[in-house]
Length: 464
Image 1 (cartoon, rainbow, N blue to C red):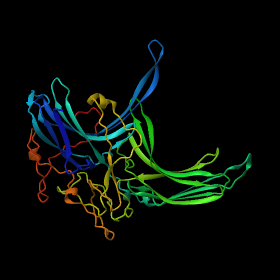
Image 2: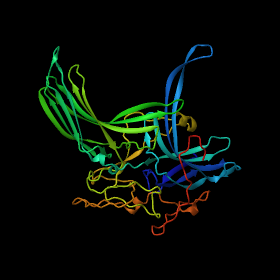
Image 3: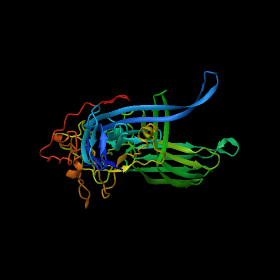
Image 4: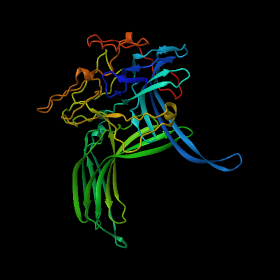
């Protein structure tokens, strides 16, 4: 290929940002052949989209019935920025000579944008694009998605700390007589609290008292993610996608016997429960306990709603009791320096767990020739000895550091880890080729970023 472009983010190889932070980086364009172009521009977009099709029928003008395919759509726009870095949209053509060109970019994320997500019927997506406007030819477009996380601090709601206990009881008729029943099967389930972060264990205690004459063939527990997708055109409709993200089979409980299970279910990398930031894609979780009954009897089920957050409850992560207790500021930084961090070990960032098909945008395929699949990364809290890397969730306010366990060094971010979203030198943002990316200003001489436009959610179709 005669033209290649690499889009990199400043000190953020994972491409993971929190809402309110500054996204910055550079597009490195390399061309080996001379090109006639009109302009080069960079766009940064954030949006949610829902799509599905249904087969319908209608009457023709002749009164006959015909089948057709109806596409249902839902769209929201959170971020839209377009910057011409070389040339002009309506200017004259000129020659782009072979060589290497580096164009910095930056934009402030709004404080309440939703978390990145990809499901079967829709997605929440953020991406940086560089486009070469070529007359009489298809434009060269290079794209790089990135992950945005809307922090959900589980410490802000005290109800999450309350233990949860649920009980179910079932009796069976004896033979063909509906007046005499066996002793019941009793199912009890307990969990210590109702909110967790990926990487944590859901400790549970399940008691099955089978005093009946019917065997319980299998007892299992699973964590289920349920996503509701909503459309607005041509009418408001809803569809749901349910996915098992973790499961453990516990065994059978024979008639006239009892068993108690004390175990845990590990939460993989999954999207946090939805906040009120996206109205067309909503994610929730339930812990489901199922007892399969032998014969033609109906099974027993217990469903416990749980919340998945991005910041775990204080005292529930090994290696530190102090956690982030406040959301990041809208600007993500203060006086050019990173905000203070908690003493808890920073999370790793892992690709989302998904067992089904991911969303494919047909409009994207038509526009760019092919879809660009993307799986977001989410924070996962491992044990202190597990390796972690990536950006650290920001916070404001005071946090009380905790004493690390013996023989375990206190977790703390390095200066390189703290420098998320470095602000490029404004003097180097002049459109046109530059020899190399500008150096980062020293920490004691913070550089003030150029004033960013006030970006607000706008309807689809709005041109920046």
